[in-house]
Image (tube, rainbow, N blue to C red; front, side):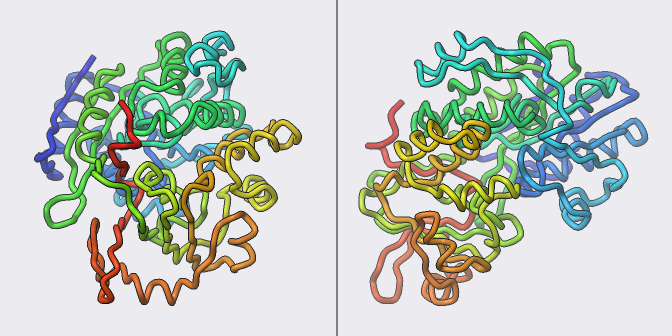
Amino acid sequence: MLYYERGSVTDQLSLDDLRKGLSHALDRLGPRKRVLIIPPDFTRFHSHAGVLTKLIYDYYGAHLTDVLPALGTHTPMTPAQIAEMFAGVPEKLFRVHNWRTGITTVGEVPGEFVKKVSGGAVDFPWPAQLANLIWTGKHDLILSVGQVVPHEVIGMANYNKNIFVGTGGQEGINKSHFVGAAYGMERMMGRSDTPVRRILNYASEHFTKHLPIVYVHTVVGRGADGKLVVRGLYLSDDISGFDKAAALSLQVNFEMLDAPLKKVVVYLDPSEFKSTWLGNKSIYRTRMAMADGGELIVLAPGLKEFGEDKEIDRLIRKYGYRGTPATLAAVKANAELQNNLSAAAHFIHGSSEGRFNITYCPGQLTRQEIESVNFQYADLKQMTHRYDPAKLKDGWNTMPDGEKIFYISNPALGLWAYRGRFKD
């Protein structure tokens, strides 16, 4: 059921608009005694999920018993991050999801179904896993809060991905990532109906339909002044709200270009991007816009590691971003990758497949480290002097010497493609 919808490419929802929209939907749901919120973590700071979580806390008060950030494989939030993103929500309410041990397998999507929806790319069964707190917490309302935006693993982020991946287990996360990579991210990004989504929808329909989950979706874009604004808010206990949010996100967050881009400069906010695991959104979100032989320059002042997880960091350092054929061969030959398919998928996502050049300018990694994983290296200070984020505007810029570049201040907020590469 769709409990609330509001959104358009011109809407700018204020704090009061969000409060009224939430209250309208929550009033329709009726009184609840034990409420769980599942918001994103700090890597989705701009989703406005922090603000919405505070508004939900204001609405339910003591009946909000738990807040479980959907970490996926990310590192737990720090007290400082919680205070910044969820200002006004008591820290004592926050729980930490452990994707290795804190999960329950609630069912299995048959291998035959996985093979069918993936077009034969993979044929393994997929385990539906989610946090113990969701399965055994005895909540009478579970609010999954997050932003719908183009995504490299599933096409469009959120809806049941927030449950089965954000609070999922090692095997489920690994295999879902690998399905998307094997099928091809460029066949999925910006689409709401994809193989991975169909697998998660099967799990929702067969294994978790009895859970009192309501999805709270935002669509966020940039206003005329360049500042972030909420373009849409949707609440539903089924896929209807997600479908509406995805349709709006495609209008708000997807920039279709008439020609490929020869040089792109992407800035990674140091408070948000500290690893290539996250920072490679600069690659995922621009790859369909990049010209053959083009150059992607990534200004990454906060970059200090490759993986958010120590084991994944080790695997990235060992195998690097060397493209699909090399990655699939490595998976076939190495049990450690067979047991960590999300890392293998990430290797594919982070490669240009030799089609364009990727130059990282890291704040805290060395030239040797960057080049060892098959990226090119450039000095951050020198490149920031030439391409100063404080002076550049999103989109086309002409440098003093006449060089034309395309600048992106936050790759997490959109998807870029040129018409010749994006096929409906």
